[in-house]
Length: 286
Image 1 (tube, rainbow, N blue to C red):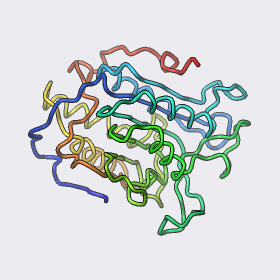
Image 2 (cartoon, rainbow, N blue to C red):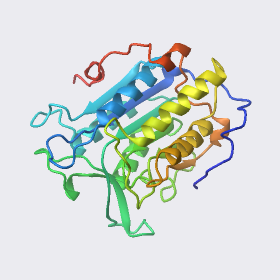
Image 3 (cartoon, rainbow, N blue to C red):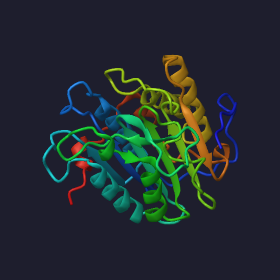
């Protein structure tokens, strides 16, 4: 079910701190420089989320981009992205977190199995091997969810942050069976909406940055809830634009009772004083 709660201005209580080492982060950020007219600035978003994960002490961070990779085996086609989901998911243990961060284009495609009420699936726009953006090349939500359910252990919690167009139900939280699992999805827009790229990254990522900063100042070393972060994203996107509405969906434990899994260890991080390396430092070498 979808929830927009009123906890943003309330205190967080009875939260257990998350162990940052139990997070496994996969960041996929596509700029599409090889497709004229489709260019974005999503590697800027990737750099921010990389800093958040590194600042939280996460050791397992994998970053996939399309910078300077056209024509190589590392080019992030649908097949290559799925390969990374499988690899990261297989490293997860029960009670860990699998965290997916996607910044790029999202699209609606015709629903072929009848599980979508509006007749359309949602999809992450992954390019073809030749850098073409076509319906056949995209990663459709049905396939994305099946890979998650097959390769991420049942007791591993899943957090998906999707800064892309048409992403309201892109994790199929409502239409797939997640019984016995915990999944949380924060998306930049509703299924029928486009998400804005400001030239310095996406609106959702900017809202996420703000709520993490303000919560870190407010709570210091104390945990704060995933619900607080989700509500902060909803409010932050609303303040920045009226063209898109941030979406939050979940299945499983109430997010008001779940600690945000990437707490910053150093308060001075909010002033961007922490160094976390370059994006390529976290790319898969296999």
